[in-house]
Image 1 (cartoon, one colour):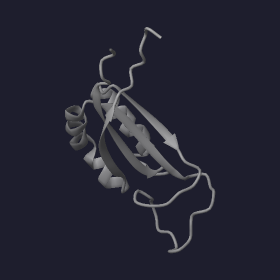
Image 2: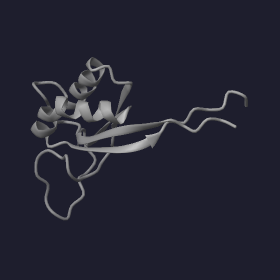
Image 3: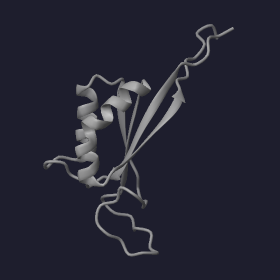
Length: 116
């Protein structure tokens, strides 16, 4: 019988792809800090269009933003929950300064059965 998949946590940060942190893309700063802290890994996903918390600037109510050069962006980091919770204060300045929104949820890491 295979061992159960190990528990981990996923930190998801949603922000506007055009958000800058000290003249550098904020998503790049988040990845840089995750790497510096020795977290397992980080990925950045760029959306085509979207709206919600984490958008920079103001949008007219009732209108979905049109396709453009800057859309939503998501940074996903997976590691142990305690390590991600310890990481959040390390990026609080970036999150606050760019109106980014972070969520933390528990996940299971799928480890394929090598006997297959």
